[in-house]
Length: 176
Image (cartoon, rainbow, N blue to C red; front, side):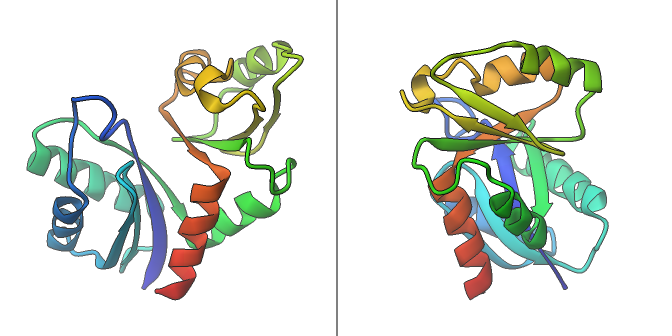
């Protein structure tokens, strides 16, 4: 079995794309995934799969969720080991004002250069492989490097989690 952490893009934000975590767990189990655990309402799932190919797992999840929910759900998937490495590479240490934006795929180099060209005095970013680390001391709600901004510039689906959520997901994955 392979252990993954799935991040659902855009669920339970506003009044659209609402899903209860109990229903999400049930759908995941119906899709054949094991030891499914959700964390908070923003679409964080820890689970095990027989499939090692993460793209196949992503495709299965997206197709199954789309059918069960009746709307499109984008899934950004990482193995638990990848999540641990993401945390280790965090350049802003344990600061509560740190956020990590997860990219659906590797971004085009030119698009990354565009993002890197923006300079904000009160915010810092570090671009990783398929993640962008953001330090925003005024809070993410006021951040220049918002998820919407990054998606537009990268032309890729992204989803952002705060550092505490990333740490908690890794902790929950270890407990399972």
